Image 1 (cartoon, helix red, strand yellow):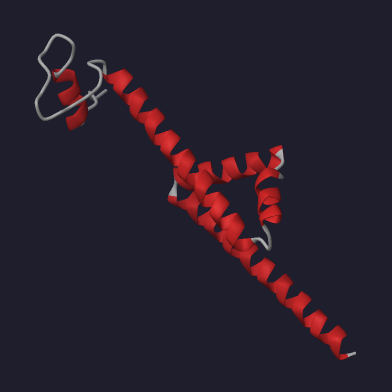
Image 2 (cartoon, rainbow, N blue to C red):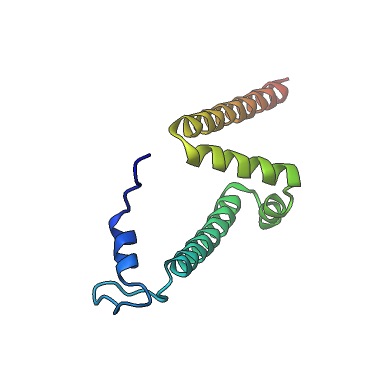
Length: 130
């Protein structure tokens, strides 16, 4: 079995462990690489969650008819909806095929919604003519 090669950052972190002097070109909060990875992970996840919630609120407000309807869209998610969104995001981020499946499903859903809206508009015009 071949030995796994480490990347440049891992080699640099190993070189700057507790016993060695810190490098001047790499500023890290802890001499322990696992701690630094944990800190980075928490920061990235926190920032992405804040951005995601802000984007969700803006999209809901822009697409809803009123503020109350936008709040209802955001607060009215069921556990099943939350799990489905989580599963779709995991599928889309793990492989190009998964991304294609999720993007295709979203495109189909968009076309379905537009078709239903067009049918409703045609029905209203037909009812108004009669």
